[in-house]
Length: 181
Image 1 (cartoon, helix red, strand yellow):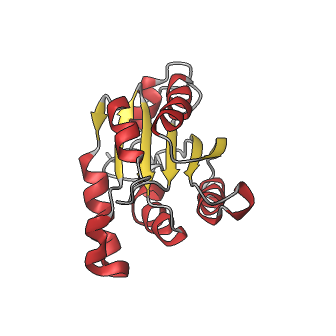
Image 2 (tube, helix red, strand yellow):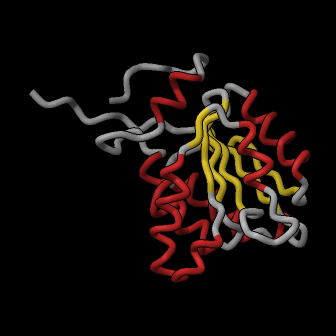
Image 3 (cartoon, helix red, strand yellow):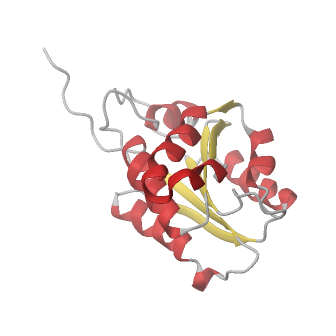
């Protein structure tokens, strides 16, 4: 006897854009992520744009990690090699567990679009206090690659054989934690 199809579980997702040059009105990458997550049936928990400062980044993300109503955080920007690009250094210390496959897969699938320049991407992800933190480069194209190629399916409770949703729910006891598998 096969299991019944899983029900869709909407997630509460916060978006953080890290940029020294853009305003929220010019933030096409952050807006792309907002548009995609809401079109997929998820909820925008919060959205901020801040400059690339390690301690401000940690403060914003730590606040979301501490909020049991935020299931996941997606950042855009700050993953390159320029002196001010500090997302990996800012967030890595917050992780309880890293999600190594996220950065590996992001670089693999982005190779089709940008060739070997993908080796300069420092996209990373991890779990912190039951909240997923996924760090993408700042271009809208990179956000599209990350969303379409990885996050859209991994944030969908119906994706088989597995997805991130049960991990977010199990770690946030204020949410319905019935088995999604």
